[in-house]
Length: 284
Image (tube, rainbow, N blue to C red; front, side):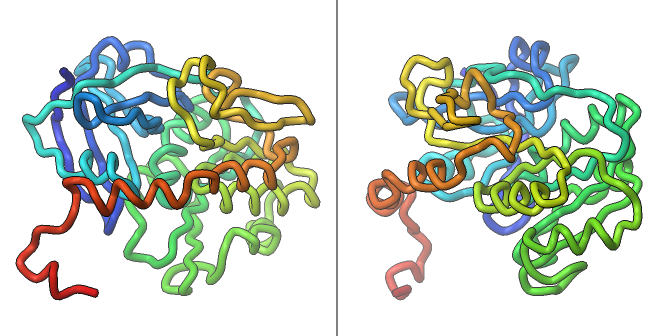
């Protein structure tokens, strides 16, 4: 069993969970992930690792509460335990010197891009952080990015902070920086990474994305996480999760992620994660 050291909702629907997993923490590298279970006989889900402490033996996971398993994880409290933390899984991110790197993080991707940005900074790169959210109240870890990024840019759907809109405004944002960007790293939802890849393709700026297809075992055995990259089949769990964004078949990935959308909603509504608050039955 893996003990929960800390657990809290950091902004609405986004949670930070820190667990003791000494062997995993000692081997963890930027860009890798773990597979966890919230309970015995529960489903296995992949989560990016947003931070770790090899000396304390802890892992910090930032995740979006969106399904039955993440709802159970979100309910954990300090002192609870979970039965499974498997990792590190996937290839570590390629940390090289590029010059100026724009690190884009949206939603849970703000957390997962952080260790990559930190490692790129340690390699001598100049870091510019572009944080994306629906509204300004959904930003988190801004203090962490201020300590490592030369500049931090906000992008909000409702325009409450920084640029208004989505990552499709990336060409305009890059132009406003008034300095060359030599590489882009994007973490977050599939739509964000696709739009960032589309925008940087025309600008001929290389982009690295962390793919998030459906996944079960995380070791290349099940084949569920297959993606098409440069016309060839790759497994995100062992060949990735990082890939060159301009080479990804985004249409195929988006279609595959929708395969079990209806079924994924059912356990959230029928599991023990239903709302038992006093006024729950009054809600539509």
